Structures are given as C-alpha cells and as structure tokens.
Length: 293
Length: 337
Image (cartoon, rainbow over all chains, first blue to last red; front, side, top):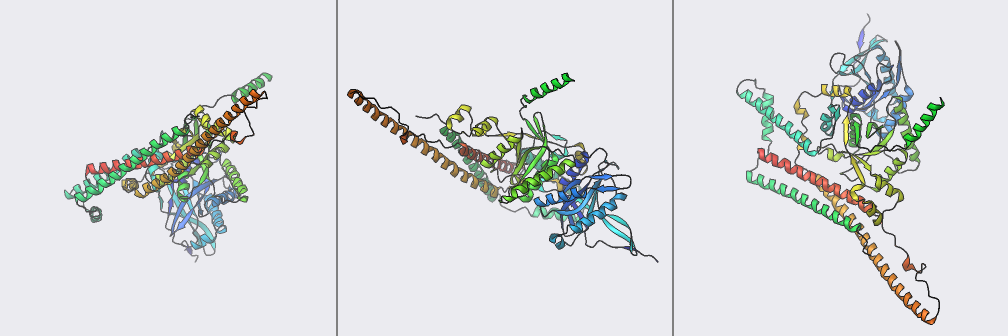
C-alpha cells in the first residue's frame, strides 16, 4: 500500500512578520510592471529568529511568463542580492513574493528555485539559525475578493514513497508590524497626497486625542460592566486594576513641587536658547560690519 | 522636411535658454520615505547616506525611489567599488522600470548636526552634473520623539555663486546681503502615494485602537535628549567663540598694519620734502617690497556661518522640546490625572 507521507517542516517556523516597506515596494513594482506582464515576482530579504521570519526588504526580479512556463532572470536576482548584501549583510534571502491571488502552478517551480538559492547562499549566519525553508508571500493587488489579502505560505513536500508528488503550500500566520517612527507616519502614508508633514505640536495633539479616546473607551466599559450591560471579563478587569495601581502614589504637595521644578527647568532652557540666538545676531553684525578703517 | 528640422533646432536652442522655474516643493513617495526611515534607523547612531531617484517636473522635484549606500571604509581602492555599486544598482533598477535619474541624496544625522563643509562640497559636486538636486536629512533621534524629522535642503543660488568664486570676505557678503540664514534653503515636502497603496493601507489598518496609540510621543522624560542637545550647543558655542577670536585677531593686525603704513608714509613724505629742498628726485610714496604693505588675507566667513547655522538649529530644537513638554505637562495638569 502506498503511503502518503507528510514531512513536517524541519524547524518550527510558526509565523512571518512583514514590514510595511516591503508592501509599499511590492505595490510600487506592480504599478511599474511592463505592460505585457500580469504579475510581479521578486525576492524577499530579512532575518529569521526564534521561529519567526521577519521580512524587511524586497526587490523585484524581471521574469517572462507564458502559458505554462515561467522564466526568471537569475543573473539579475544574484546581482541585486550581492548589492543588497553590501549595504546590510544581515538581511538574507528568506523567500519570494508574487502578486495575484492564491498560489498557481508555476509557483511550485519558482519555489523550488528559491529553495535551491537558499541552500546555495547559506553562509555561517544561516547555519546558526537552523535553516528555514523559504517563505512564499502572495499579495493580491487586484482585490479579487473585494478585499486586500496578503498571505504567506510555507511549502511542504507531499511525497508518495520515494517520488515527490506535489508541494503543498500551507498558510502561516502573517502579521504587519511597524516600528515607532513608522507608526508616526502611518496616517500620512495612508492618503494619496499630503500637503505638509505635521510638525511636533500637531502630532502631539493627535496622540493626546488618541489617548483620550482610549481612556474614554475604558471608562465606558467599566460603566457598562457595573450597570450589568456587558458581561464582565475577569482578565480585562484585572488588567485595568493593575494599570491603575501602577500610577505612582505621590502626595499633591510633592507632585506640585516636582512639576514646578520641571517647568522651571524648561523655561530656563528656553531663556538660554533665546539668549544664544541674540548673541548669534550680534556676532553676525560684528563680523560683517563695515570696515572701521 | 527642412522646415521642421530648422524649427526643431530653433526650439532646441530656445529651450536651453529657458530658466528653470524655482523649486517650490519636493514631492516624495511613501515608499521612498519608508525606505529612508528604515535605513537610517537600522544603522543609527552611525551616519548613513543613500541616493535619491526621481523626476524633475517644473517646480516640483519628485522623489520616487531611493537606495542606500554601503558604509564605506576610508580606503582608496574601495572608491571604485562604491562607484560600481551605484552603477549596478541604477542598471538593475532601470530594468524594473524604476525612474533612473539621480536627483540628490539623503543622509541621516544626529540631533541636527549636519551643517558641515562636506555637505556643501557634496552639493557642489552634485550641482555640476545635475541641474537641480536636493538633500534630504532625516533625524532618527528626533523621530523617536514623535515628529517625522524629514527635511529637504538646497543651497541657495547666491551662495553657490559665491562659493564657486571661493570668496567669502566681508565685503562680498555685504554686497550680496548674504547672512547665515541664506546658506541653506529648506523646501517643503509633500508626500504622495499611488492609489493602490492607499487602498492597501486603509484596508490593513489594525482593528484595535490600542495598538494604534503611539505612547512614545507622550513621554515626559525628554531629559537625556535635552542634555545631549545642550552639550552639542556648548561645543558649538566654543567653536563660535574661537571663530570670533580669529576675526578679532585679523582686525587687530589689520589696524596695526594700517598704522605702520601711515607712519612709513609720513617718514617718506618728510624725506621727500628734504630731498626737494636739496633738489633731488623724490622717492616714490609706495614701496611694494616693504612687508608692511602686504595685504593680510581675511579669514573666510564660511565656517562661522556654518557654525552659526548649527547653533541656531540646536536652539530651535531645544525650544521645541521645552515648549512641547511644557504644553503637555500643562494639559495633563489641567485634566488632573
């Protein structure tokens, strides 16, 4: 009896994390693709740590596609890879992406190619990270389901005895993460055109408003629970009480003193900087003043 | 046939005499912004640079893509490598239909200390090859405080003329009414995105607002940050005072030289009078071989201008921080936590 064997992935890769730069760059490449191409294919670069693949960078690779064949420009891929490694040697090959919904037949071939590339480019860094098979990312740029779907897959080889039959692409959880600085700019990046970058004050205003909204929500939730409108959730309750308990307890007098000291320090700094500005003005006048002689 | 060719030749000649409209706005794509942020943040606190690519359209300079430069060691043979890397990247990007024109470069900075002579020299280098170029400065430390610290800088035209002639004496500067604020010109940045991206971003906005709130901005402790700013400011003031000393020394020696010249001239005149009385040829009133007539070179104002710029930058930053922390504390107080 033939037995269908599942070989589980060699290492516990649980999930993938995508940086928004990659998404932007994929969309940009899609918009700029040559007219005859239907989709864009490219390489993903990043790092692997603790079972999580972090996708940090990407570049498109030109390819030719016909009804049943896909030809990838290997030379180009290798050149770009070398160039990128020069800038950041820690970002290594972690997979590949293609636009278009779902995984198609040609994808298995391309995936095999990338598996081989990964093995070829394995250096000491990767060895230490217990080599992880490449991740395949699909970005649905045409919104075929009426929504944006970005999915990541790992390939598992299905084999019948000795012969490999097919490669099954299993979806792995993907999450979009941003670092602080990017989150600051996120609102700006959502729109198609922004007239000016918000300065410090406006940004602060926006953050304060968000904080207020959050506090209001929490307040409303507590009210609802107290009045019996919503079922209490013990975890949330405990979390809220922990948060409130972590507000430092200070007598109002001590708080006032600390606060005023702080404000005074700041005002002293403002005074100092205005003084320096006046000094600069005078110095400049002196330097370029009309010659006395 | 001849007519159209003649016309196009005329057109070509006339268009090359057109003055380019002044640069008013730098339009950046979200992709370029994110790439710059990512690159600078990864390597902070080291300073990194990269190339900007895009299009020059009328009074708008569009930045559509960028790529980072590898960190270069101070080695001569790696110069060629750097150039190769650049050519390679441009070629590869051309193949995927990315705009291939260099329109400037970007660099990261630490707390706003970027006004150096090297910056000006790089500008002059770029300006020789490209008609319009811009430098984008990104400050990762300020961005972690909340605002997106992205600035587009360009050298002003009068300053560039002066620099080409390499003449920074007081007279010339007064002539052109060039003060230290006129060296760099800051150009407003606009951000644009393709429709596809905005669709994706709006779709992918995380559901829970908790994840959205950016707490770092609301931190009250700007102390270490201010301290560093103040340290830099003090260093700058020291540099400024040493530049002032240089000028003082120059003026003093100039006045001393003038006095010497006058004294010498008097002596000559007296001698001449004596000679005339004796009926001999009067000696010339000038003697170029005498060392007191050698003109003393005036020290260049460029450095002091740059330092002044730097100092004012720090001052502005400190002002910004102090006032924003003040505002925040006042607001918190008024809502009595």
